[in-house]
Length: 89
Image (cartoon, rainbow, N blue to C red; front, side):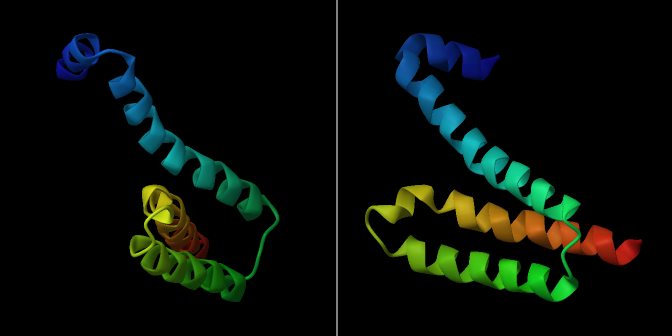
């Protein structure tokens, strides 16, 4: 309810900012779920996690890429969760 009040008070710019973080989580999630259907090995999933973490740490200090740092960090997070789920089976 508070978010709706803030959006109506500030206009549509607040709505686009709120949707930006949603896309930063949904886009890597959809891509990684598609990769999970391929049935990759655990070594490849570990490499995806490491590359996501390295890309996140590199993007934090870059002025223009800093705004997209949610993409590789969510890749690492969702890949880690998928790896845990795969190891439980």
